Image (cartoon, rainbow, N blue to C red; front, side, top):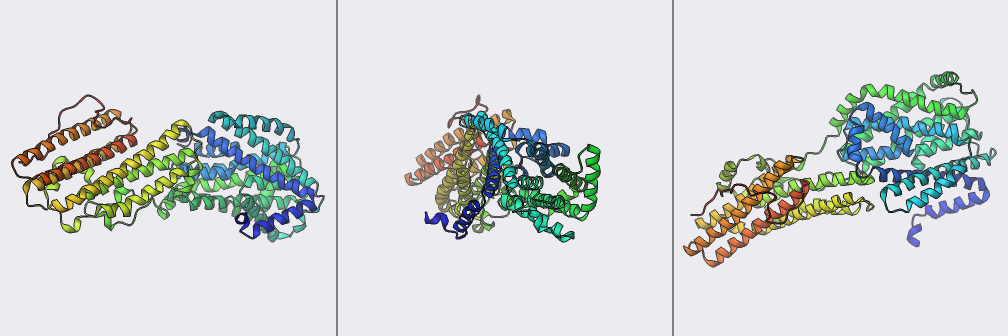
Length: 617
C-alpha cells in the first residue's frame, strides 16, 4: 500500500480533489463527465483494434495507396474513434512496421487533424441540445452484454457501443457540471485584451489537451464552457487553436518509443500543427471574419457561438491543409535525409569485414509504438526474426571461417574455391563471442517484445506469434551448433593430414551451401513453386552428403588414414553440421510461410541427386 502513494503529489492531489468535490458538487459532476468521456474514447479505441485485427495490412494498402485516399482515411478513422491521438499513434505504428509509406502516413496525419472537426460539429449540433443520456443507457447495456462475448467481432462491437454510451453520458455530465457553476468558475474572468489574451487562452487549450491527452476532450470542455456562458467566444477560438497544437505532445511521446520511420512522421505532425497554429493565430481577425461570413452563408445565427466555434475549427484546419499539401514531396525528402533508415543486417558486413568489428547488435525493428496494435506488433516481430535469420547466417559463416557477408551472391564454384583458400588467423572469429555480442541481445529483445504483445489475439494472429518465436529458437539452436562445430574446427582446420583437412573443408562448404540456398529462399516469398524446388534441393543435397561423407570416413578409417578417435570426431562434427542445416532449414521454412515438413522428408517428388563438390581420396 505504501508503494501506491510513493510519489508525494499523489495523495496530495487526491485529497485536494476530495475537498473540491465536497465544496462544490458540480465540480465533481464536471470531473466525472470528463472521466467518462475519456473512458468512452478508450473503449472506442479497443473496439477499433478488434475490428481491424488480422486484415489491417490489406485494408491499409487499399486505403492509402494514393495521397487523397490517405487523407480520407485519416478523416474517416478519426471521425469513427473520435481520437486523433489514437490515429496518430496507430499511424506511427503502421509506418514503423513498414505497412504504409511516409507519404501515406503524412496524409493520414493531416486528414486526422481535419477529422477532429467532426467531433466538434457533432457536439455543437446535437450533444449540447439533446439529452444524450437517453441514448447512452441502451448503448451501455448492449455494450456490456456484447463485450463479454469471446468472439472478437462481437466483443469489438460491444466495445464500440460501450464507448459511444460513455461518450454520450460524459457529454451530458459535463453540460450539467458547467451549468451548475453559475459564474463561480467563469473562465472569462481571466480575460486579457489583445494578443496577450489570445496567447494565454491558446496556452490553456494546449495545457488541457496535454493533461487529458485528447484534443476531443479539450474541445468538448471548451464547447460546454462556451454554451454555459463560462467562456467568451473569442477566448474559445484561441483555446481551440491551442487544443489543436496540444496533440503534438502525443506525437512526441510516440516518437520516443518508435524507430526513425515513426520519428519522421512525428516531425511532420509537429510541423503541420505548429505552422497551422501560428498562421491561425497570426490572421485570427481575418479568420473570425471568414467564420462570420461563412456562418451567414450557411444560415447559422450570429449568436450560435458553439456552431461558429466548430466552423472556425474546421476552417483553420482546412487552411493548414492548403498550406502544407504542396510541400509534402519536399517535406518527405528532408525528413528522409534528417532521419535515415538504419541499414539492414545484410548490409552492415561486407565481404572483407569481420563481425567482431561491428558494434554490438540489438533489435532494429522492435519498438514500443508497434505494440499499440496486434497487427503492427506481429509485423515488426516478423521483420526482427528475419533480421535475426540474416544475422544467424552471418554468424554461422564466420564460425566456419567463411566471410559473413556476400555468400548469397556466390556460385558453387566460387564458394568451393573460397573454401580451399587458407584462412588467415586474423580472419578467424570466435563463434561463442559473436553469439554473446550480436545474437543473444537480439534474441532477448524478441522474447521480451513477444511477451508484451496483447494476448487477446485472433487464432491466426496467435499462430503467427508462435511461428515467429519457433523460428527464432531454431536460429539460436543453429548458432549454438555452429559454436560446437568450431571447437574442433579450430584445432583441425590446419591439420597436415590430408584426410582430416579435406573433411573439414567439406563440412565448411556444406555450411556455406546452406547459407547460399536459404538466403535465396527469402527472396522468393509468394513463389511457392520456386520455394518447393529450393526445399527439395536442400534436403536431397543434405541426405546425399551425409551418406557420402560417412562412407568416405569409413574408407579412410579402413585405409589407416584416420584412427578411430579422429573418425569419431569427424562423425560428431558431421552431425553438428546437419544440426546447423536442419535448424536453419526449419526456421526458414517458417519465415518463407511454408508448412514445416518433418526432418528428412522431402516436400515433393525427389529431384536429381546433387553430387558433392569434395571427394576424399
